[in-house]
Length: 321
Image (cartoon, rainbow, N blue to C red; front, side, top):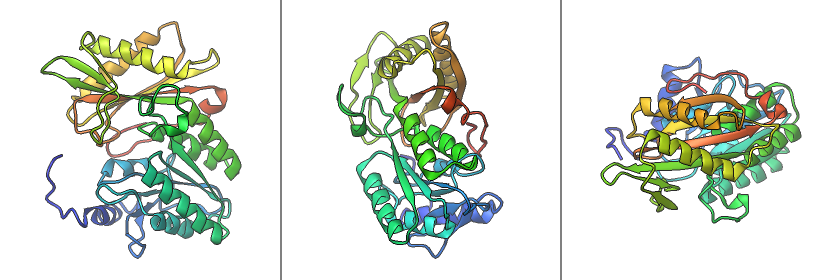
C-alpha cells in the first residue's frame, strides 16, 4: 500500500474530524463518541427509517462518499484492519433517535457481522428498532453450490445503500426497507478481475486480503476478452429473468487507468446486446481496497419494484452513482 504521512494510529478519527470541518454542509461528526469515527448527514430525520452503513476496516475515505442525500444517513469506519465498532454503530443510531428504526448495512465478513449484531442487541435494550442486511455479492468467495450467506461482500453494497435509502426516504416502514434491501442483495453479484500484465493472464476471484484467484485465463487478456468472460460469469451466477434489467457497475482498482473502466463498461453492455435489457451503467473508482490492476464488476438484476429505487443519481467527491 502507499505510505501515509499522517499518524496511522489516529488517522481514521482525524479523517472524520477533517471531513466535518471542511465540509460542514455535508458531514457532521460525533467527536465524543466511543471511537470518534462516526459521520452523519446534517439533515438526518428521526421521523423515518435511517440507513447506517459500516464501511469496513482500514482508512477508506471513499466510503464517506456513501453518505448523503440519496445515499446513507450515517457511515462508520473501522480502524486500520479492524471492523467498525459495535459501540460506534450503536451511538450513531442513538444520536439519530429514529422512532421508525434503522437499517444496518455492511459487507458480510465476520467482524462486520458480529459488530452490527451486537449493536442491534444494544439498540433493542433502548427499545430502538433495527434490522440488519449484509451484502453477499462476491460471487466467487464461496464454493459452487454453497449457500449465499457464506459469500463475502464487495461493491454491491452501494446498490443496497441506494435502494434502501430511496425506499426509506419514500416513507416506508423498517420491515419494508429491510425486505427490499434483502431482495436486492439476492439479485446482485460482483466479480473481482485482476490482471498479470507480465504474463498476460486474467485472474478471477482474487481476494483483497491476499486470497488466491479461483481461476486463471490465458486467452482473455484484452478489453473484449475480459468483457465477455465477466458477462458470462455473472449471468451464470444470477440467471437474469425476462422481467429484469441488468444494472452494471465497473469499479477500477487503484493501479488501473480510469479510461479502461469506462471502455470495459461499454464493452460489457455490448455483450448484453439483445439477450438482456440493460438499465444504468456506472463506471469509476468506488473502493480502494484492491491495490492491484483490475476491476470489480457488479450486476444487479432489477425488476420493476427494484427499479423504482434506482432512478436518482448521487454525486460524491470521487464518483457518481
